[in-house]
Length: 194
Image (cartoon, rainbow, N blue to C red; front, side, top):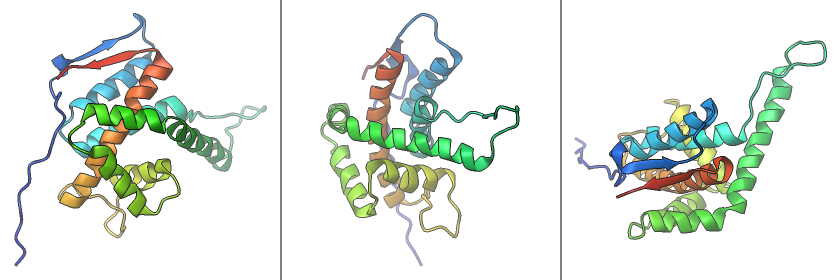
C-alpha cells in the first residue's frame, strides 16, 4: 500500500490584495486593466497552477495578437494563415525572454533571494532538453497544465509534489518576467509590499 505524504505548498508572501499597488496612468484601456488584473490574480492566488496561467496570459495579451483576419473580399483567413500569425507570437515571446534573461534573473533573485527559485528553474529547464526557455515555459508548463490529458506524459498533476515544485519554480521565473514586461509595455510600476 502506498503511503501518502501531506505537504504544505509555499505561497507568495503577498497574498493579501491590500499589499499590492499599481502606479499607472489614470485612464487604462480594457486590455491594460485586464493585464494588471491578471498580474494581481497571479500574484495573490494560492493555486500555483492557476497563478502560472495568469502570468502566462499576460504575455499572450501583450505579444500574441490573435485576431480574426479578413482578406480583401471580407472572408475570414483560413486557419493555416492564422496559425502562422500566432506562431509569430511565440517567436516574439522567445525573443523577448532571450533579450531580457539577465533582467529576469536579477528580478527573480530579488523577489525570493533565499529560496533559490531561479537556480531550480534553470535545473528543470536543462533537464527538459528543450531548445529554449520559452519552449520549456510553453510546452512543459503552460500546455501541460492547460491541455493535460491522462494519456499524456507531460501532464502536470496538482497532487504530484514533483510537478508542483516544477511549476512553482517556473511560476517564480514567469512572475519576474511578467513584472518586467508590464513595466516595459504599459509604463506601469507594480509595487508589491511584504
